[in-house]
Amino acid sequence: QVQLVESGGGLVQPGGSLRLSCAASGRVFVINPMGWFRQAPGKQRELVATINKGGTTNYADSVKGRFTISVDSTFTTTYLQMNSLRPEDTAVYYCYAYVGGGQSNYGQGTQVTVSS
Image: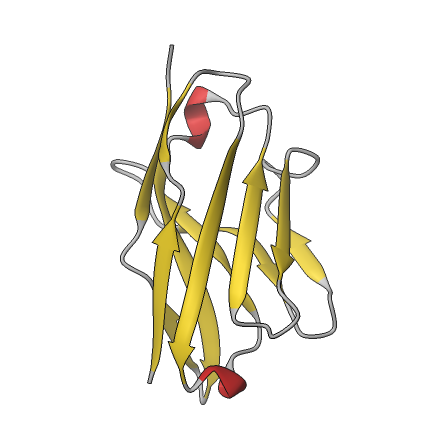
């Protein structure tokens, strides 16, 4: 089992920045890739960004150039630096880890609200 715990959400004004963190525990050696999804009210959960053990990153078109995903050297903590935030970025952000065998784990989510 892999457990994921997010932190760093909150309220920010448009144009502002936030940094999300996600710490994995348990059978962390099976994780590859890690990343972030988000779900806005009334919408489906969508991919935001992922990173694999080779360092390859993948971003949703809507966040390219504004968000940056990174991971620590042990591949157990992932970060999402979010700059130039927009109201449409408001959502619950979920940490994600693919653990093999077609299975993915998600954290409990952290709320990000972009509003003036």
